Image (cartoon, rainbow, N blue to C red; front, top):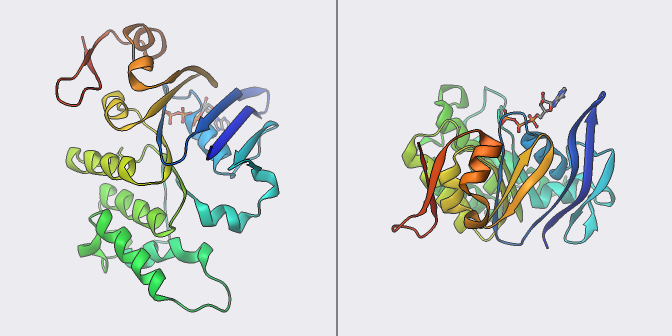
Length: 252
Ligand SMILES: Nc1ncnc2c1ncn2[C@@H]1O[C@H](COP(=O)(O)OP(=O)(O)OP(=O)(O)O)[C@@H](O)[C@H]1O
């Protein structure tokens, strides 16, 4: 196991946002987190990344309770890109990506060739190498999103948590990002709205509704016409694609 959550409950005021969630993200696999607006995906990801504490329940990283692990060791292994990730607008792209190395550096260590290699690899993988010296402020929404991914990859994480990472990307870069993340030997948890991309690129899916998990399993187990009607309120037909052998949803 890589990330395991047991019976998480998170309330805000009298509202229960996360209502008894348990899940396992397996090492090296891509777990898709689906659900309608307001179902609790972002809240769950923030709990899993250690940014919020649940009122009850437990989150384990490789069997260790996250509460017993320090902030720095968590940052050395878990990278999280929030939905509206922002950064200091005066920075260059390269500086933003270099921030990913911060958890690995100590007061005494200078910038190393390993830091350079991680930053360069991340810029190449995300297609941002040519814009390394551009100002963050001057980037398009999609380029900002790819720079945030580069920063997360420069962190050399073992777990990558992404909240709707493709929402500003053109179709070429949506597919590119999903293909990249699913091919990396990193445990990934990705909140997504595009159900066909979830089907194509995720090993397993978890579907949330009103703070609870209502379905989980492989894409062909989860993405059924009944679930699409009951949870997402859409009429659809689901067929196995002859191109990638995964379920493909046709909205009717
Ligand atoms: N800090 C907060 N204060 C009040 N309500 C909150 C807070 N954070 C989350 N909520 C509520 O919890 C519910 C779940 O929100 P969350 O952002 O986790 O959903 P989501 O599934 O990520 O939605 P979306 O698909 O729209 O991004 C929503 O009803 C939201 O209003």
